[in-house]
Length: 248
Length: 348
Image (tube, rainbow over all chains, first blue to last red; front, side, top):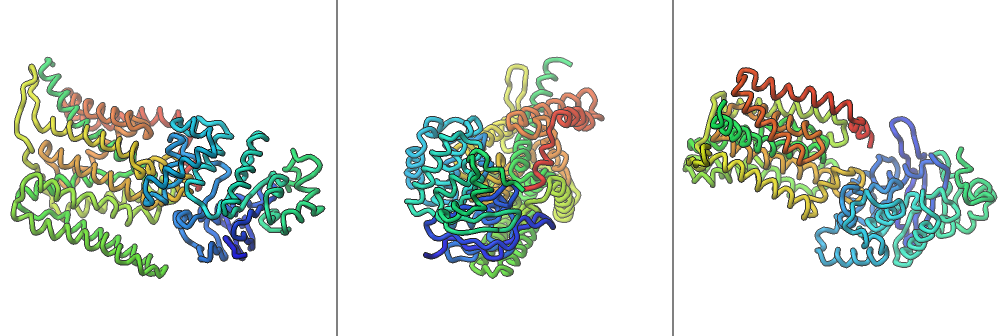
């Protein structure tokens, strides 16, 4: 299968401190790939650099094109989209406007195409439609994550980067979000999923990488990795409620 | 002081205050979107006012040279960047935007000026010369520093201010100019005599404020500007280019500055550097509004206009001192209350 995203010798540094060392990673077209690892392993850094928010070194191929050094807006226009850990919503704009701006790079497609997608997002998240005219800053944690996902969907992504989509959410909402992730996969969206909640991530993913202190230390098909003794010991543990047990 | 004088001073204060309010809104917009404290805002006032006066006298305003120089500088930067990344396809657009357009405007003005066009045509020519300077100044001076700290951007602003004032002296000379009013009439409103020009100022300010509101509430670009002001990372993630919002906010600031200059040209005699003081008063208004709220900034600016007008009656020698002295207590109050917003912005 061809690759949606391919990284080779990909490094990111904050000043002189390197947060990611020569990582190589591949997301197959239409697949869900997860990167698991403890807090501070460089997972968020990885996604930020793929999006062009942070400067990086090394090779970055997306849908066959070399995108090293391309500005974030170009990556978005080519169908890359990040749902960040901190959501980064427009708190003082309405839910509706947040969604509308999600489709900013498609502004020339015309109001009708955007309105149709908006209706789809509202069908997927009825809660958002109820709150359409409310300011994004007034939403609950779960609703914010839904809005962040909905805003990303308005961009019609081909590669969706998800940073800790389950962080700080109630189990019921986490299940809902993972249901949506599985659903999106059926529509052909490739996904790179970064998680501390390794159990949920490994269940939904096709392939997985383990990232520790800036290095990829393990990789393999998700099902295989879920049975790897080191992963079981450090990331799955006996209780799924303690995914942070492996923090180094 | 009797009621006549009071009303007269109030009218004067409100007229000036309306212009300060426009400038305060522009400063606030530019700061919220780009974190630039836009000191050179006043130069757009000067350029517009002096250009209008010169057109009226049938002379070719020096603004066309500033526009041409700025356009070429921006084209050189863009062209160099495009050549380095071998993006040759960008060159025609760069040439059209930064070379052909400014030169076309310059030639048009040079051709039209000696023919003494109607006043409303003069106004259009002034806008065509001054407004493109906004995005050009952003492209040349600020875009390369887009991720720098507020302080660095402020220092760049001071540099841009001095460069533009210098150019202003070179191309306009040291003489003061005043244009003739758009509508030379006076109305009796009870005891108060209202000049038509101050009605113009008020009407134009109101129309502009409503237009800005419509832009921000009802267009995708206006919303993109607000989104950038609210959350810069979020704006980048939905694909709003930093360069676009920067240029857009500078375009609006230049437009507001130019309109202010056109409105003020018949009221005051302007010199090559007068705009700075006027812009600074808009800035005081924006600070009175805490550099955060548009309605508060407009109100603050109106207050500055009134304070200035009344202090020129009671203590005319200390007029500027009183207005700018107002900043000190407000800054003290703001810094006691603030949570160091600027520091948070430093890393991105």
